[in-house]
Length: 85
Image 1 (tube, rainbow, N blue to C red):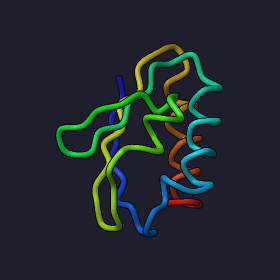
Image 2: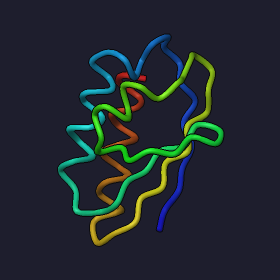
Image 3: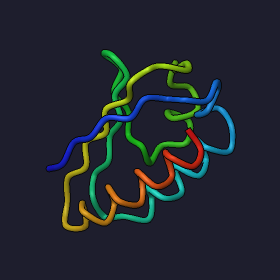
């Protein structure tokens, strides 16, 4: 299992194209991918969960990736986050 954190740099980043792109990328991997903001933890493969997760600029998201393709998933998600969040 791999974990990493990311600080949101754009306001409303998950409620826009960034959230949809994140879900599309996460859904392409066999690994289980979750994201946590404080005490709220959701699957990064759930569009509804990602869009409704309460976040704001400056929040730190913690991602957990566990599965056979976790290294590739982490790399792809980090690239998405840097571009959209």
